[in-house]
Amino acid sequence: MVTDKLAAFGRLGLDIIASLGRSGRFLAGVLGGVSKPSVAFPLLLKQLYSIGVLSLAIIVVSGLFIGMVLGLQGYTILSDYGSEAAIGQMIALTLVRELGPVVTALLFAGRAGSALTAEIGLMKTTEQLSSMEMMGVDPLRRVIAPRLWAGFIAVPVLAAVFSVVGIWGGMLVGVEWLGVFEGSFWGNMQSSVSFTNDVLNGVIKSVVFGFVCTWIAVYQGYDCVPTSAGISSATTKTVVYSSLAVLGLDFVLTAVMFGDF
Amino acid sequence: METGMDTSPYIELRDVVFTRGDRRIFDGVSLNIPRGKITAIMGPSGTGKTTLLRLIGGQLRPDSGTITVAGENVPRLKRKALYRLREKMGMLFQSGALFTDLSVFENVAFPLRVHTSLPEDMIRDIVLMKLEAVGLRGARELMPAELSGGMTRRVALARAIALDPELIMYDEPFTGQDPIAMGVLIKLIRDLNSSMGLTSVMVSHDVQESLSICHYACIIADGQVIGDGKPEELKAHPSERVQQFLHGHPDGPVPFHYPAADAGRDWGIAGRAADGNG
Image 1 (cartoon, rainbow over the protein chains, first blue to last red):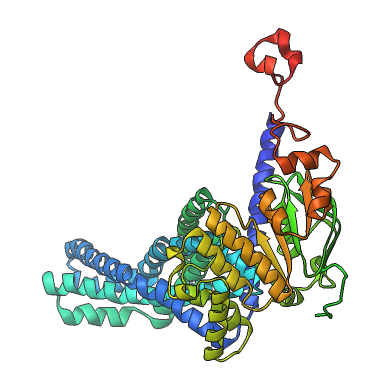
Image 2: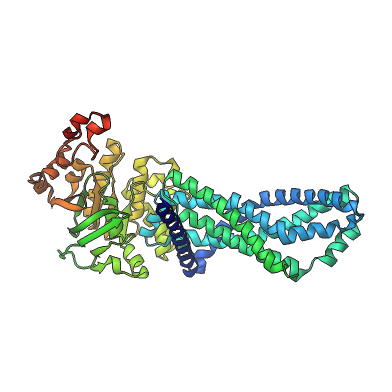
């Protein structure tokens, strides 16, 4: 009995390692193959539109509401100490360092990552990827690479949009509604947000999250069991793994970036 | 590639062994597929007929054995050479496998756009010619979702011959087709083979349709070739298994019953356990 459980545990470990190995080889295959720019660029543009531009709506609306909530909460807490003028820097730091990259990546995984997995999984199930291979076209280059690069590019840009809209939403609530002095809102923000420490670190985070989320999404689609149950489980895995990876990595990155006391 | 007089087989399989998981799908299959002829590969469902096509196309690698296509050993080819070889192959998938985001016209134009640098008006002419050959020139603006099953396969066929391949592989071309669509496909397969000098490989379990058009047929079961030859030779084949498959007898060497435990034990009648699967 004990040996059975031990064996099952070992099997699980081997499966995980094999899967990591497969996804690593997959990534190397996608990034290693270079297509002609005249072919690759239109494909990349199309994907940037469908996973980047079409994600803008959810990013803008979520950014706005999160910024507004931050404004409200920040005002309630800070006004207890009479320091509601610091609301600008609080909102900006929260968004630029944490919520911008993290929430964008989570929304991206839900909106675009799941769609990528389902699309690629369905292409696999309906033999479109196979037929491409048989026509002498490498699906890794033709289908996967443009989607992967589009995700890498889109997530940092979306995170920047999220932070900007969030700060504007915080300003709407803090300044326009609750009456914090506009000069101290922006002035405190400017003096306390550092480009290298805060903005750049936030950008690094969003680049890492974009990389991980898109990698998980395209790999899950490409590796899925080609049945309807397989696609559904792959889509679920994309969202679950992406979310866990983003939150886990966020802690690690934060500890490395800001843990230096 | 070579002259029309070449009589060497276009595809040669020698002692091919292929296992998937714990299951041995092919256990030493050897097979010659003649050049310029229609070869039907038949066998019960689940015997790995589609797997055989994927082995020929290099999408899967055998555990051992050689697969030679047009003089090249497919499992040993490097990626680039394999992709170049595939430009000489066309494959018709069971589902058609059309790209759902492209129109009929663009589906057929896809291999031309990727592999050639022909000007747009020439691509248009070629695509229309290929669509005309399958009788769907008028359907060029439709999207794959608007096509019937038979039309989907015809578009896929037009796409498979877009680059004028030397070899075309059909994966279950007749499955799920109504009689008219089936008649159209049979005519197309026969006409394309003779007019383009193609080597055609057809995987199917539709015995009558396959035997009516093929020059050569081979039956695979349990990982091995159990019978092969010209259609008339096969019909007179002495093997009981071949006869059972060709005539669709429900019981015979391939048993009606899936292997099961003693029936007596299953129903709790211990005394009758020896009766087996009654």
